[in-house]
Amino acid sequence: CPSDRGSLDETSLAQNRPIQTIINKLLVRCSNASANTAGEADGCVWSNALSERATHLRDECSFVEVQCGLAGCDFKVRRADVAEHEAICEHREVACVRCQVRFIARDLDKHQLACKGVEIECPRECGKKVL
Image (cartoon, one colour):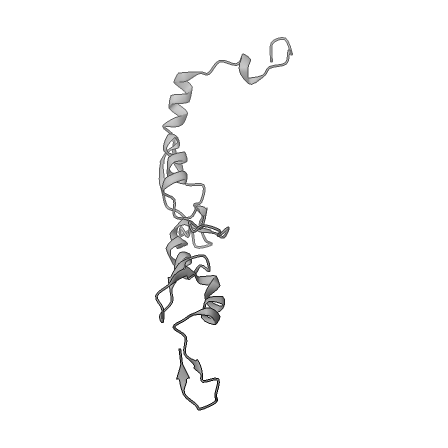
């Protein structure tokens, strides 16, 4: 405390609601905003009241890193790039073009070895392909 030099902790302090209201109304930029050397924005261009920033970052900002939504994938990517990543993610579900069985993309090689719809060379070496 400035008056008696006693120690303070958060539980002994009172919140000044009028000042907090003023602060929450201050216009701020997204924490993912940045400017290049020409002064042009190359990050998030959002600006609004400070009280809205947490919601923007949690739900909207396309520059926030988020985890891939596919089960088993730990890859982190900007929210704006999630769809692009999920389209090529090894954890996405795909269907075999020959037998239509669905499986995880990273298991393609393993599936092709066991696929009942894969043509292979005839074991009698006649040159024909068989399933």
